[in-house]
Image (cartoon, rainbow, N blue to C red; front, side, top):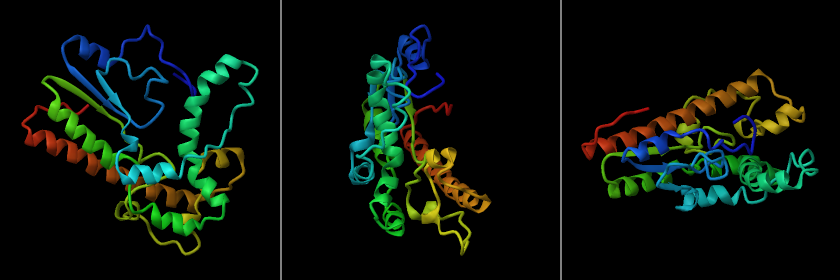
Amino acid sequence: MVIDGDVLDKKFVTMAEMLQAHGYKTIGLCPNPYISKFSGLHRGFEVFCDPAHGSLGPRLYDLFNRAALHRGWEGMKGDTNRFLERRHFFDAELGRAHGLEILRKLSVSKRALWEFTGLFDKYAKTTNKVAYKLIDKAEEPFFVFIHYNETHTPYVLPRGFRERFMTPIPEKKPWEINQDYFKYYSGEAKMGELDFSVLRAIYDGAIGYLDAKVFDIYSFLEKKDYWIIPW
């Protein structure tokens, strides 16, 4: 799999398929279309769900991302089947990636968005809650795959983690930093070392937040006295 919209060839057997064949209960949790029925990476999971629309936090995040920026269609429109096949995939991915930028273009205050999106995460908290319920119902042995999205731009995570590694830079406010990689690679947005230093600090905060979420899963399994293989 190399580019957006690629589908895993059926000649390849997934880990979930192998474990399911050996009697494992297989559970997959992923809000990312790259790992979904669109890419074929859902194969082998008895239960595979997108926890993106559970509680208030994810719904607020998705509220920002309903209007997709339809980019990248021009190269596909000559091939109708390929265009239609991949459009749904791109709609989901580009919509989530660029929704905040759309609101900024509509003159919504950048700082207001920054402050507001520091009140919740994308999906991690809800994903863990769903995982706890599914694991409680699962019979051993079981295999659980969890994918988190908080380390993908735009960075949406609780303020305490988002700002944990940030050093105040008077000339670079975090809400002014471009987080749209399309803008950067197209040359529309110019970014220097100070911009990237702020992004790295936010990214480190996202890693720290997901470390905490993974530890919550580990602690849950430990209390249940399950043998854990942390792959």
